[in-house]
Image 1: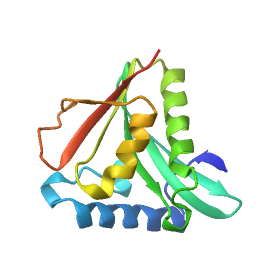
Image 2: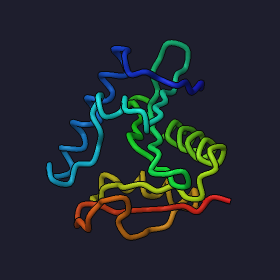
Image 3: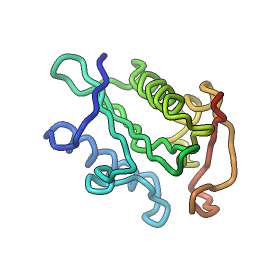
Length: 152
């Protein structure tokens, strides 16, 4: 598996982002959807990666800079055919490594509270994330859970 910076111009990645947004709406009401669209993911405060095996897209993930000491995981998605193969784990490792390289003291995320998000929550817990209050403008929401990890 190779992870590359991605400019979100390729057909495969555009389709995966559409699938990601559709999946978020399937499990979260519109007012609780915090997934970013293509244009939002292209903003300068976001670094976006895609994971590949030769010409096959495996998944994607992004890191948003909240400030010089705090990053946020965004847009973690694995292609359905590659679920439970370690794609999300590898992308999360990559984002955490990049956060440390940037000197962030903390990395946080928002995820859904519904059952469909349980595998993601378990992954984050295995990586040392803990539940926390809303951060960076998020509000309390019964459909959202917030997690953070202190970086050393």
